[in-house]
Image 1: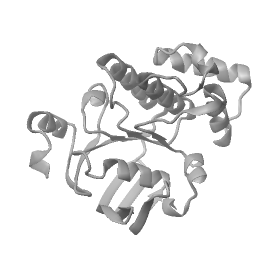
Image 2: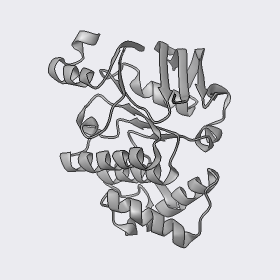
Image 3: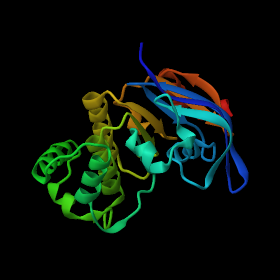
Image 4: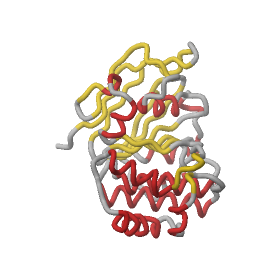
Length: 245
């Protein structure tokens, strides 16, 4: 039986004193891929940001455990070190820090030390999956990157860090069809290479087409209103979210 790695129980979260999540429950076991869907403003991204510990997301009630430990008591850096990763909807630019430095330092922080030569060799192999030129490693993180390049850089981090649970927040947002396909290939490579768990937050279904989905959760007004398997995605494509609100 697979080990449960994330358990969210009756989670209530405020943002700027407004209640966004209203008693949300969620359980993910190792190797599973879960999808959070729902209309804009339903609380999807709030869940991801809360799990990562962003300070403006204030937990007022509820419990969250990750790998059997109290996640809410962990500082942000410890959550990452334990194997929690998030690909952000709008990756920020970090002038003065090269992509290679950022990823290599992150790998070392998680206990994976490697020579610069071995790192660049491993990164180049993963960049082939994403159709990225290795020269991107020498560029400043996300500076001057297009939207698609930023998302590919996020998935490159995912492939190099190999987290136990990856949260993808609207990773396909704003991408054209080819970029979505490439990002999806990178996510599938993470599934195949690591067997890690995924929590994909999206209001679109494009990134899901080539992935194996274990469970779909519909969020409306801060709560899970319906759960099902991948056939629930077909229902959303046909009927939209109105029937779940």
